[in-house]
Image (cartoon, rainbow, N blue to C red; front, side):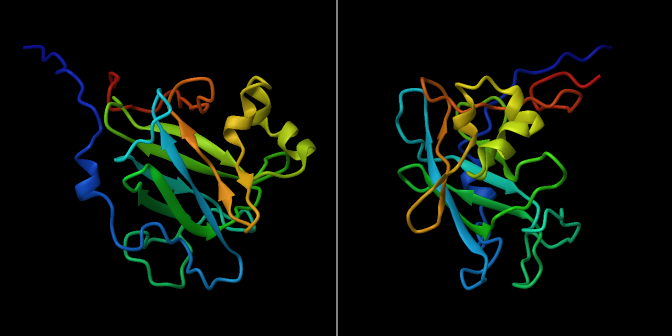
Length: 193
């Protein structure tokens, strides 16, 4: 007997009750000498803030080293794991306390990998949040340089006057964030052969 797939379900809003955990947004303590705030707002296709999204970030440390340490859900206050999770507030705003990532290799501009879960999405969305910086470094990044020039800015954070990094996410519209697709990676909604 051959089984047929059942219809896909959206990824929310139930995750807001089960996935957030205390301290998930703090990859480092605010007192850390290199601490920086990565924050922004998640907007739907009409430009309205999404009040029930959840974001995860993955990143290397400030030297470009990708952590292999366990303990992301049970933070000890000393070990940098490079992973965090934050739910948005009632007006779609999220905030992480972390360090600025370093480059992971020659020609690779520093970035945060961002995953977004939200109601109405059939699957999570992936994007990158690059550090603002030297235009030549950003231009030579393999992924960023493959994005049409008029869309690249949607992947670059903005440095605010207090030193924090702002990264707004737009699901659709004129300012739609560039989202990534990872071929050969099983997705929740696609067939797994």
